[in-house]
Image (cartoon, rainbow, N blue to C red; front, side):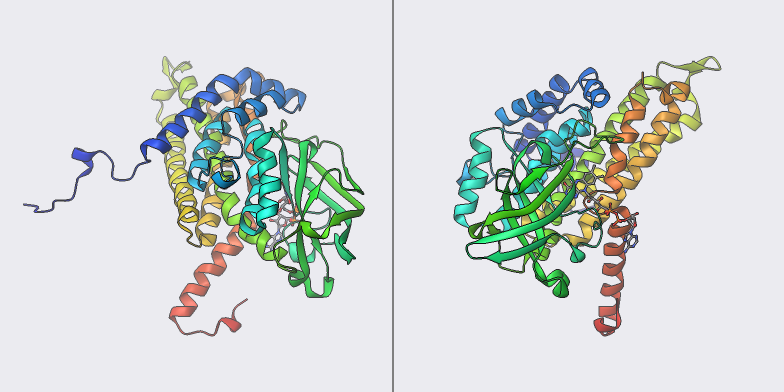
Length: 406
Ligand SMILES: Cc1cc2nc3c(=O)[nH]c(=O)nc-3n(C[C@H](O)[C@H](O)[C@H](O)COP(=O)(O)OP(=O)(O)OC[C@H]3O[C@@H](n4cnc5c(N)ncnc54)[C@H](O)[C@@H]3O)c2cc1C
Protein backbone atom coordinates (compact mmCIF):
# COMPACT_ATOMS: atom_id res chain seq x y z
CA UNK A 1 0.00 0.00 0.00
CA UNK A 2 1.29 3.45 -0.87
CA UNK A 3 2.31 5.61 2.07
CA UNK A 4 2.75 8.78 0.03
CA UNK A 5 1.12 11.92 1.37
CA UNK A 6 1.52 13.84 -1.86
CA UNK A 7 -1.77 14.88 -3.44
CA UNK A 8 -2.86 12.71 -6.31
CA UNK A 9 -4.33 13.76 -9.61
CA UNK A 10 -7.68 12.31 -8.58
CA UNK A 11 -8.18 13.99 -5.20
CA UNK A 12 -6.60 17.37 -6.00
CA UNK A 13 -7.19 17.79 -9.70
CA UNK A 14 -4.22 18.02 -12.04
CA UNK A 15 -0.94 18.92 -10.33
CA UNK A 16 0.10 21.29 -13.04
CA UNK A 17 -2.27 24.16 -13.54
CA UNK A 18 -2.52 27.89 -14.02
CA UNK A 19 -3.12 30.16 -11.04
CA UNK A 20 -6.60 31.61 -10.49
CA UNK A 21 -5.28 34.97 -11.72
CA UNK A 22 -3.84 33.42 -14.87
CA UNK A 23 -7.14 31.65 -15.52
CA UNK A 24 -8.88 35.02 -15.21
CA UNK A 25 -6.52 36.62 -17.73
CA UNK A 26 -7.11 33.70 -20.07
CA UNK A 27 -10.87 34.10 -19.73
CA UNK A 28 -10.69 37.85 -20.29
CA UNK A 29 -8.76 37.27 -23.53
CA UNK A 30 -11.08 34.45 -24.60
CA UNK A 31 -14.22 36.54 -23.99
CA UNK A 32 -12.65 39.47 -25.87
CA UNK A 33 -11.71 37.21 -28.75
CA UNK A 34 -15.16 35.59 -28.93
CA UNK A 35 -16.89 38.98 -28.87
CA UNK A 36 -14.59 41.14 -31.00
CA UNK A 37 -12.84 38.72 -33.35
CA UNK A 38 -15.83 36.81 -34.67
CA UNK A 39 -15.43 34.63 -37.79
CA UNK A 40 -17.14 37.36 -39.82
CA UNK A 41 -14.73 40.04 -38.58
CA UNK A 42 -11.72 37.78 -39.20
CA UNK A 43 -12.94 36.98 -42.71
CA UNK A 44 -13.52 40.69 -43.46
CA UNK A 45 -10.00 41.80 -42.49
CA UNK A 46 -8.48 38.81 -44.28
CA UNK A 47 -10.38 39.58 -47.48
CA UNK A 48 -9.75 43.33 -47.40
CA UNK A 49 -6.23 43.13 -45.94
CA UNK A 50 -7.31 45.95 -43.63
CA UNK A 51 -5.82 46.89 -40.28
CA UNK A 52 -8.25 46.45 -37.34
CA UNK A 53 -7.77 49.85 -35.65
CA UNK A 54 -10.94 49.63 -33.57
CA UNK A 55 -10.20 46.16 -32.19
CA UNK A 56 -6.64 47.18 -31.33
CA UNK A 57 -7.99 50.20 -29.46
CA UNK A 58 -10.44 48.05 -27.49
CA UNK A 59 -7.64 45.60 -26.66
CA UNK A 60 -5.57 48.53 -25.40
CA UNK A 61 -8.47 49.79 -23.27
CA UNK A 62 -8.83 46.53 -21.35
CA UNK A 63 -5.08 45.99 -20.89
CA UNK A 64 -4.45 43.17 -23.37
CA UNK A 65 -2.09 45.35 -25.40
CA UNK A 66 1.31 46.12 -23.82
CA UNK A 67 0.54 43.59 -21.06
CA UNK A 68 4.25 43.07 -20.35
CA UNK A 69 5.02 46.73 -19.62
CA UNK A 70 6.18 46.89 -15.99
CA UNK A 71 3.96 48.60 -13.42
CA UNK A 72 6.66 51.25 -12.86
CA UNK A 73 5.92 52.58 -16.37
CA UNK A 74 2.14 52.39 -16.11
CA UNK A 75 1.68 48.80 -17.33
CA UNK A 76 0.17 45.68 -15.78
CA UNK A 77 3.57 44.00 -15.44
CA UNK A 78 2.47 40.61 -16.75
CA UNK A 79 4.98 37.89 -17.48
CA UNK A 80 5.65 35.90 -20.64
CA UNK A 81 3.29 33.13 -19.52
CA UNK A 82 0.34 35.51 -19.16
CA UNK A 83 1.30 37.02 -22.52
CA UNK A 84 1.11 33.53 -24.07
CA UNK A 85 -2.34 32.94 -22.58
CA UNK A 86 -3.57 36.14 -24.24
CA UNK A 87 -1.77 35.43 -27.53
CA UNK A 88 -3.35 31.98 -27.82
CA UNK A 89 -6.89 33.20 -27.19
CA UNK A 90 -6.63 36.14 -29.59
CA UNK A 91 -5.05 33.99 -32.31
CA UNK A 92 -7.92 31.55 -31.85
CA UNK A 93 -10.08 34.36 -33.28
CA UNK A 94 -7.57 35.48 -35.94
CA UNK A 95 -3.78 35.50 -35.78
CA UNK A 96 -3.51 38.54 -38.05
CA UNK A 97 -5.86 40.59 -35.88
CA UNK A 98 -4.16 39.25 -32.77
CA UNK A 99 -0.92 40.88 -33.93
CA UNK A 100 -2.55 44.30 -33.88
CA UNK A 101 -2.72 43.82 -30.09
CA UNK A 102 0.26 41.58 -29.35
CA UNK A 103 2.99 42.82 -31.74
CA UNK A 104 3.84 45.83 -29.55
CA UNK A 105 5.54 43.36 -27.23
CA UNK A 106 8.22 42.83 -29.93
CA UNK A 107 9.28 46.46 -29.55
CA UNK A 108 8.73 46.55 -25.80
CA UNK A 109 11.01 43.59 -24.96
CA UNK A 110 14.36 45.12 -26.07
CA UNK A 111 13.49 48.39 -24.32
CA UNK A 112 12.65 46.47 -21.15
CA UNK A 113 15.88 44.50 -21.39
CA UNK A 114 18.31 47.29 -22.26
CA UNK A 115 16.59 50.68 -21.97
CA UNK A 116 17.72 53.43 -19.62
CA UNK A 117 15.26 54.73 -17.05
CA UNK A 118 14.58 57.76 -19.29
CA UNK A 119 14.02 55.59 -22.37
CA UNK A 120 11.62 53.30 -20.51
CA UNK A 121 9.69 56.21 -19.03
CA UNK A 122 9.40 57.93 -22.38
CA UNK A 123 8.76 55.07 -24.79
CA UNK A 124 6.93 52.52 -22.62
CA UNK A 125 5.01 55.32 -20.88
CA UNK A 126 3.89 56.60 -24.28
CA UNK A 127 2.30 53.25 -25.11
CA UNK A 128 0.33 53.27 -21.88
CA UNK A 129 -1.02 56.80 -22.38
CA UNK A 130 -2.45 56.25 -25.85
CA UNK A 131 -3.16 53.21 -28.05
CA UNK A 132 0.08 53.67 -30.01
CA UNK A 133 2.18 50.98 -31.63
CA UNK A 134 5.85 50.07 -31.81
CA UNK A 135 7.86 47.47 -33.74
CA UNK A 136 11.06 45.43 -33.83
CA UNK A 137 13.17 45.92 -36.97
CA UNK A 138 16.01 43.50 -37.63
CA UNK A 139 15.37 41.98 -41.08
CA UNK A 140 16.56 43.66 -44.30
CA UNK A 141 16.01 42.96 -48.01
CA UNK A 142 19.19 40.87 -48.22
CA UNK A 143 19.49 39.72 -44.60
CA UNK A 144 17.14 37.60 -42.50
CA UNK A 145 18.52 34.43 -40.92
CA UNK A 146 22.07 35.80 -40.65
CA UNK A 147 21.68 39.19 -38.94
CA UNK A 148 25.42 39.46 -38.19
CA UNK A 149 25.66 40.67 -41.81
CA UNK A 150 23.21 43.58 -41.48
CA UNK A 151 23.65 46.21 -44.18
CA UNK A 152 21.87 49.19 -42.61
CA UNK A 153 24.67 51.50 -41.48
CA UNK A 154 24.86 53.57 -38.30
CA UNK A 155 27.57 56.24 -38.15
CA UNK A 156 28.04 58.50 -35.14
CA UNK A 157 28.23 62.23 -35.98
CA UNK A 158 28.36 64.59 -33.02
CA UNK A 159 25.29 64.06 -30.85
CA UNK A 160 23.48 62.04 -33.54
CA UNK A 161 23.65 58.67 -35.24
CA UNK A 162 23.07 58.68 -39.00
CA UNK A 163 21.28 55.58 -40.26
CA UNK A 164 21.11 54.49 -43.90
CA UNK A 165 19.38 51.41 -45.27
CA UNK A 166 16.10 49.51 -45.40
CA UNK A 167 14.34 47.24 -42.92
CA UNK A 168 11.96 44.74 -44.51
CA UNK A 169 8.95 42.75 -43.31
CA UNK A 170 8.48 44.74 -40.13
CA UNK A 171 5.28 43.66 -38.37
CA UNK A 172 3.13 46.59 -37.35
CA UNK A 173 5.60 49.15 -38.73
CA UNK A 174 2.93 50.85 -40.81
CA UNK A 175 1.00 51.91 -37.71
CA UNK A 176 3.91 52.37 -35.30
CA UNK A 177 5.20 55.54 -33.69
CA UNK A 178 8.59 54.10 -32.82
CA UNK A 179 10.72 51.09 -33.73
CA UNK A 180 13.72 49.29 -32.26
CA UNK A 181 16.11 49.31 -35.24
CA UNK A 182 19.34 47.31 -35.46
CA UNK A 183 22.15 48.68 -37.63
CA UNK A 184 25.80 47.99 -38.43
CA UNK A 185 28.48 50.42 -37.24
CA UNK A 186 31.52 48.32 -38.13
CA UNK A 187 30.92 45.73 -40.90
CA UNK A 188 34.30 44.07 -40.31
CA UNK A 189 33.29 43.24 -36.76
CA UNK A 190 30.03 41.67 -38.00
CA UNK A 191 27.87 40.87 -34.95
CA UNK A 192 30.22 42.76 -32.64
CA UNK A 193 29.63 46.01 -34.56
CA UNK A 194 25.83 46.08 -34.36
CA UNK A 195 23.92 48.75 -32.45
CA UNK A 196 20.28 49.05 -31.47
CA UNK A 197 18.35 52.33 -31.60
CA UNK A 198 14.91 53.59 -30.69
CA UNK A 199 13.86 55.29 -33.91
CA UNK A 200 10.76 57.46 -34.07
CA UNK A 201 8.69 57.52 -37.23
CA UNK A 202 9.08 61.32 -37.28
CA UNK A 203 12.85 61.41 -36.96
CA UNK A 204 14.30 63.21 -40.03
CA UNK A 205 15.05 60.76 -42.87
CA UNK A 206 12.67 58.00 -41.72
CA UNK A 207 9.88 56.86 -44.06
CA UNK A 208 7.65 53.82 -44.47
CA UNK A 209 7.00 51.51 -47.42
CA UNK A 210 3.64 50.21 -48.65
CA UNK A 211 1.63 47.60 -46.76
CA UNK A 212 2.70 44.12 -47.87
CA UNK A 213 0.05 42.10 -49.70
CA UNK A 214 0.56 38.83 -47.83
CA UNK A 215 -0.64 35.25 -48.13
CA UNK A 216 -1.94 35.23 -44.53
CA UNK A 217 -2.16 37.37 -41.39
CA UNK A 218 -3.46 39.93 -43.83
CA UNK A 219 -4.83 42.24 -41.13
CA UNK A 220 -1.29 42.87 -39.90
CA UNK A 221 0.36 46.07 -41.19
CA UNK A 222 3.75 44.76 -42.29
CA UNK A 223 5.99 47.07 -44.33
CA UNK A 224 9.49 48.46 -44.95
CA UNK A 225 11.16 51.13 -42.84
CA UNK A 226 13.50 53.31 -44.90
CA UNK A 227 16.33 55.25 -43.31
CA UNK A 228 17.80 57.84 -45.65
CA UNK A 229 20.41 59.79 -43.71
CA UNK A 230 18.04 59.34 -40.77
CA UNK A 231 19.09 61.42 -37.78
CA UNK A 232 18.73 59.60 -34.48
CA UNK A 233 19.62 61.42 -31.25
CA UNK A 234 22.60 59.86 -29.43
CA UNK A 235 20.44 59.25 -26.34
CA UNK A 236 18.33 56.84 -28.42
CA UNK A 237 21.11 54.26 -28.57
CA UNK A 238 19.66 51.23 -26.81
CA UNK A 239 22.04 49.38 -24.50
CA UNK A 240 25.82 49.53 -24.56
CA UNK A 241 27.56 50.49 -27.81
CA UNK A 242 28.10 47.42 -30.05
CA UNK A 243 25.79 45.22 -27.97
CA UNK A 244 22.88 45.31 -30.44
CA UNK A 245 23.30 41.80 -31.79
CA UNK A 246 23.18 40.24 -28.33
CA UNK A 247 20.10 42.30 -27.51
CA UNK A 248 18.39 41.17 -30.72
CA UNK A 249 19.08 37.50 -29.93
CA UNK A 250 18.18 37.78 -26.24
CA UNK A 251 14.90 39.46 -27.15
CA UNK A 252 13.87 36.37 -29.13
CA UNK A 253 13.93 34.32 -25.94
CA UNK A 254 11.11 36.56 -24.66
CA UNK A 255 9.18 37.02 -27.90
CA UNK A 256 9.23 33.54 -29.45
CA UNK A 257 6.96 32.00 -26.77
CA UNK A 258 4.06 34.23 -27.84
CA UNK A 259 4.56 33.24 -31.49
CA UNK A 260 4.34 29.59 -30.45
CA UNK A 261 1.23 30.41 -28.40
CA UNK A 262 -0.35 32.09 -31.41
CA UNK A 263 0.26 28.98 -33.50
CA UNK A 264 -1.43 26.89 -30.77
CA UNK A 265 -4.42 29.25 -30.85
CA UNK A 266 -4.83 28.83 -34.61
CA UNK A 267 -4.55 25.05 -34.20
CA UNK A 268 -7.19 24.97 -31.47
CA UNK A 269 -9.47 26.90 -33.80
CA UNK A 270 -8.75 24.37 -36.58
CA UNK A 271 -9.59 21.50 -34.22
CA UNK A 272 -12.80 23.19 -33.00
CA UNK A 273 -13.99 23.75 -36.58
CA UNK A 274 -13.01 20.20 -37.55
CA UNK A 275 -14.86 18.62 -34.62
CA UNK A 276 -18.03 20.59 -35.30
CA UNK A 277 -17.94 19.76 -39.00
CA UNK A 278 -17.19 16.08 -38.34
CA UNK A 279 -20.29 15.95 -36.13
CA UNK A 280 -22.47 17.52 -38.83
CA UNK A 281 -21.28 15.94 -42.06
CA UNK A 282 -22.42 12.40 -42.80
CA UNK A 283 -21.06 9.82 -45.26
CA UNK A 284 -21.92 6.14 -45.55
CA UNK A 285 -24.90 6.77 -43.26
CA UNK A 286 -22.99 8.12 -40.27
CA UNK A 287 -21.14 11.21 -39.01
CA UNK A 288 -17.66 11.42 -40.52
CA UNK A 289 -16.47 11.74 -36.87
CA UNK A 290 -17.34 8.04 -36.55
CA UNK A 291 -14.87 7.01 -39.26
CA UNK A 292 -11.61 5.94 -37.71
CA UNK A 293 -9.59 7.65 -40.44
CA UNK A 294 -11.15 10.99 -39.48
CA UNK A 295 -10.90 10.33 -35.75
CA UNK A 296 -7.18 9.63 -36.10
CA UNK A 297 -6.68 13.05 -37.69
CA UNK A 298 -8.62 14.63 -34.81
CA UNK A 299 -6.57 12.66 -32.28
CA UNK A 300 -3.28 13.79 -33.84
CA UNK A 301 -4.47 17.37 -33.73
CA UNK A 302 -5.50 17.14 -30.06
CA UNK A 303 -2.17 15.50 -29.11
CA UNK A 304 -0.05 18.13 -30.85
CA UNK A 305 -2.07 21.03 -29.48
CA UNK A 306 -1.65 19.75 -25.93
CA UNK A 307 2.06 19.11 -26.39
CA UNK A 308 2.60 22.48 -28.11
CA UNK A 309 0.73 24.36 -25.41
CA UNK A 310 2.77 22.75 -22.64
CA UNK A 311 6.07 23.38 -24.44
CA UNK A 312 5.02 26.99 -24.88
CA UNK A 313 4.01 27.48 -21.26
CA UNK A 314 7.25 25.88 -20.12
CA UNK A 315 9.54 28.19 -22.11
CA UNK A 316 7.45 31.23 -21.14
CA UNK A 317 7.59 30.23 -17.48
CA UNK A 318 11.38 29.96 -17.80
CA UNK A 319 11.50 33.57 -19.05
CA UNK A 320 9.52 34.65 -16.02
CA UNK A 321 11.89 32.80 -13.67
CA UNK A 322 14.94 34.36 -15.34
CA UNK A 323 16.12 30.96 -16.61
CA UNK A 324 17.93 30.79 -19.96
CA UNK A 325 15.36 29.24 -22.34
CA UNK A 326 17.19 29.51 -25.66
CA UNK A 327 16.92 25.76 -26.30
CA UNK A 328 13.42 25.28 -24.91
CA UNK A 329 11.93 28.20 -26.81
CA UNK A 330 13.47 26.92 -30.06
CA UNK A 331 11.85 23.52 -29.42
CA UNK A 332 8.48 25.14 -28.67
CA UNK A 333 8.55 27.40 -31.73
CA UNK A 334 9.72 24.67 -34.07
CA UNK A 335 7.19 22.14 -32.78
CA UNK A 336 4.17 24.43 -32.77
CA UNK A 337 4.94 26.03 -36.16
CA UNK A 338 5.66 22.76 -37.97
CA UNK A 339 2.74 20.89 -36.38
CA UNK A 340 0.45 23.81 -37.15
CA UNK A 341 1.02 23.22 -40.86
CA UNK A 342 -0.04 19.60 -40.44
CA UNK A 343 -3.00 20.44 -38.22
CA UNK A 344 -4.42 23.14 -40.51
CA UNK A 345 -3.84 20.90 -43.53
CA UNK A 346 -5.78 18.09 -41.81
CA UNK A 347 -8.57 20.52 -40.97
CA UNK A 348 -8.93 21.29 -44.69
CA UNK A 349 -8.90 17.53 -45.37
CA UNK A 350 -11.71 16.91 -42.87
CA UNK A 351 -13.82 19.56 -44.61
CA UNK A 352 -13.27 17.81 -47.95
CA UNK A 353 -14.05 20.03 -50.97
CA UNK A 354 -15.49 22.74 -48.71
CA UNK A 355 -12.13 22.99 -46.96
CA UNK A 356 -10.66 24.27 -50.21
CA UNK A 357 -13.25 27.05 -50.48
CA UNK A 358 -12.85 30.57 -49.13
CA UNK A 359 -16.51 30.31 -48.07
CA UNK A 360 -15.35 28.10 -45.19
CA UNK A 361 -12.96 29.20 -42.46
CA UNK A 362 -10.21 26.57 -42.50
CA UNK A 363 -8.12 27.47 -45.59
CA UNK A 364 -7.41 30.86 -43.95
CA UNK A 365 -5.95 29.10 -40.91
CA UNK A 366 -3.31 27.36 -43.02
CA UNK A 367 -2.44 30.63 -44.79
CA UNK A 368 -2.24 32.50 -41.47
CA UNK A 369 -0.08 30.02 -39.63
CA UNK A 370 2.47 29.38 -42.38
CA UNK A 371 4.51 32.42 -41.41
CA UNK A 372 5.15 30.95 -37.95
CA UNK A 373 7.70 28.74 -39.73
CA UNK A 374 9.35 31.89 -41.11
CA UNK A 375 9.29 34.90 -38.77
CA UNK A 376 11.29 35.25 -35.56
CA UNK A 377 13.73 32.69 -36.96
CA UNK A 378 12.72 30.05 -39.51
CA UNK A 379 12.11 26.42 -38.57
CA UNK A 380 15.53 25.58 -40.03
CA UNK A 381 17.17 28.17 -37.75
CA UNK A 382 15.33 26.70 -34.73
CA UNK A 383 16.80 23.32 -35.72
CA UNK A 384 20.26 24.89 -35.89
CA UNK A 385 19.79 26.13 -32.29
CA UNK A 386 18.43 22.80 -31.06
CA UNK A 387 21.05 20.73 -32.88
CA UNK A 388 23.91 22.85 -31.56
CA UNK A 389 22.57 22.65 -28.03
CA UNK A 390 22.24 18.87 -27.87
CA UNK A 391 25.63 18.33 -29.54
CA UNK A 392 27.33 20.76 -27.15
CA UNK A 393 25.72 19.20 -24.09
CA UNK A 394 26.97 15.74 -25.01
CA UNK A 395 30.40 17.08 -26.05
CA UNK A 396 30.69 18.69 -22.61
CA UNK A 397 29.98 15.33 -20.94
CA UNK A 398 32.52 13.64 -23.22
CA UNK A 399 35.21 16.25 -22.49
CA UNK A 400 35.42 17.41 -26.12
CA UNK A 401 36.91 20.89 -26.59
CA UNK A 402 34.05 23.23 -27.68
CA UNK A 403 36.48 24.87 -30.13
CA UNK A 404 36.25 21.68 -32.18
CA UNK A 405 32.51 22.25 -32.65
CA UNK A 406 30.84 24.55 -35.17
C1 LIG B 1 4.82 38.37 -42.32
C2 LIG B 1 6.22 38.57 -41.83
C3 LIG B 1 6.44 39.37 -40.70
C4 LIG B 1 7.74 39.60 -40.25
N1 LIG B 1 7.94 40.42 -39.17
C5 LIG B 1 9.22 40.79 -38.86
C6 LIG B 1 9.47 41.79 -37.84
O1 LIG B 1 8.54 42.30 -37.20
N2 LIG B 1 10.74 42.16 -37.61
C7 LIG B 1 11.81 41.63 -38.29
O2 LIG B 1 12.94 42.02 -38.03
N3 LIG B 1 11.61 40.65 -39.25
C8 LIG B 1 10.35 40.24 -39.53
N4 LIG B 1 10.12 39.29 -40.51
C9 LIG B 1 11.26 38.74 -41.21
C10 LIG B 1 11.55 37.31 -40.83
O3 LIG B 1 12.05 37.22 -39.51
C11 LIG B 1 12.53 36.74 -41.87
O4 LIG B 1 11.82 36.61 -43.09
C12 LIG B 1 13.13 35.41 -41.45
O5 LIG B 1 14.02 35.58 -40.38
C13 LIG B 1 13.86 34.70 -42.60
O6 LIG B 1 14.73 35.56 -43.24
P1 LIG B 1 14.71 35.67 -44.84
O7 LIG B 1 13.31 35.92 -45.24
O8 LIG B 1 15.72 36.69 -45.23
O9 LIG B 1 15.13 34.25 -45.35
P2 LIG B 1 16.64 33.74 -45.56
O10 LIG B 1 17.45 34.03 -44.34
O11 LIG B 1 17.14 34.24 -46.85
O12 LIG B 1 16.38 32.16 -45.65
C14 LIG B 1 15.88 31.56 -46.83
C15 LIG B 1 15.75 30.06 -46.57
O13 LIG B 1 17.05 29.49 -46.26
C16 LIG B 1 16.98 28.84 -45.00
N5 LIG B 1 18.25 29.01 -44.28
C17 LIG B 1 18.94 30.16 -44.13
N6 LIG B 1 20.05 29.95 -43.41
C18 LIG B 1 20.04 28.64 -43.07
C19 LIG B 1 20.92 27.78 -42.31
N7 LIG B 1 22.01 28.25 -41.70
N8 LIG B 1 20.60 26.47 -42.21
C20 LIG B 1 19.48 25.99 -42.79
N9 LIG B 1 18.61 26.75 -43.50
C21 LIG B 1 18.89 28.03 -43.63
C22 LIG B 1 15.84 29.49 -44.25
O14 LIG B 1 15.33 28.66 -43.22
C23 LIG B 1 14.85 29.74 -45.37
O15 LIG B 1 14.16 28.55 -45.61
C24 LIG B 1 8.83 39.00 -40.93
C25 LIG B 1 8.59 38.19 -42.04
C26 LIG B 1 7.32 37.98 -42.49
C27 LIG B 1 7.11 37.11 -43.71
